[in-house]
Image (tube, rainbow over all chains, first blue to last red; front, side, top):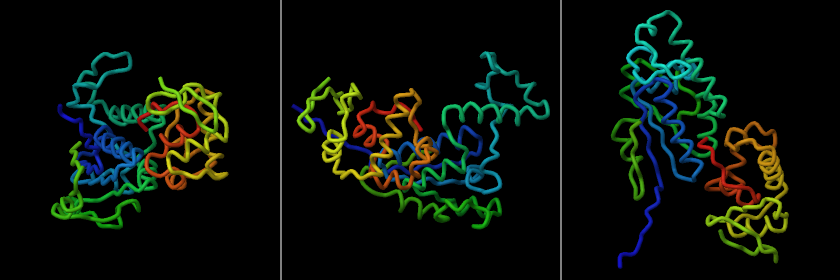
Length: 167
Length: 103
């Protein structure tokens, strides 16, 4: 008879390469959840995902209202793509999404990073993405531990029971 | 359902060890549960647990953010008081159900 062996996740390394509200929150919710379970947690932000850790942008993320077929109006009707081009529609939709999340006690990005790092989670920025968007260390939130190359990220992600997640 | 004996009193718990009846909880029982989790309780632990129990009683969901806004303790200290999985451990020791929130 086969014995059941448990292989708990000991470490998660989450990569966030996109900067829309839902992309960033997928990373933050998964990351915070891991920290709360006592799992070692590394968050790695790259390309547009860097917006989540750039001080002036982190709490002003938007969600796409054009080219987002899953977006619905209050009441459940699909939002026609043409409506998305109305000025202010993207800001309004993003504001509504943030409001709905706040009701569920989901914090703004900066506060979420506070919670994650208070629990021992680590936040990293991607070297290539930083260079590409001409960001410097000074642009980044104080929660960012370091700027890493891809090789350094893989080194960091190593170990038994470690998982890499791309959101 | 399962039963466990803490501080000489038999209590009803779930398979994972969470109390099914939070009124069975006493401070002496909490100390026994904490010992199982490898934690020695202090006044600060009890202050957090009182906050958690009150929140549970009033039906408010528990989240890590609510701890930060509790005024009782900040999140960093919370992680230090209940190392590993703080919200799960704290609710178990406080005799209330396992939190159902994702945040």
